Length: 169
Image (tube, rainbow, N blue to C red):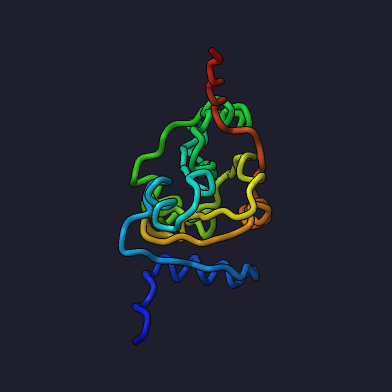
C-alpha cells in the first residue's frame, strides 16, 4: 500500500532540505506535534530535543524574528531584544502565516516567505540529535544541531531564561 501524499507545506520543507543536501527523515503523524511535549511524545525523544520555532515581531522594523529554542527552555525575550537591538512583541497567527508561510505549531526553521532574523538556543548545541517542525503541526524532521546555523543563517546565543536552582536542605 502506498503512503499518503505529503501535505504541501511538508513537501516544500522536504524539498528545501534535499536542495541543500541535508539527508534527513521527515515524519508525519496522525496526532499533533504542535507543542514540544506533544512532539517529544510522538517521536519518543526528550522534550529538550525539540527545536521549537517561535516567531516574534520586531516592534520598530516589523521584521520577523525566528527563535529556535530547546523544547525544555523558556525564551528570555530581553536577551533576544539585546541581541537584535530592538524591542520585540509576540506575533499573532496572521503575522506568522504571512511572514513564514506556516501555521503556528508547524513553523519550520527553513523556507520562510520573508527571511527572518534568526537566533538559536545554545543549549541545542549540546545534543546529538534534535527534531524541528516540518511545515505543519503534524510533521517533524531530524537533524544535528550543528546543521541549524548554516541551514538558517542563525546566530547561536544564550537565549533561555535561567532555570531556578534547586534548593538544598
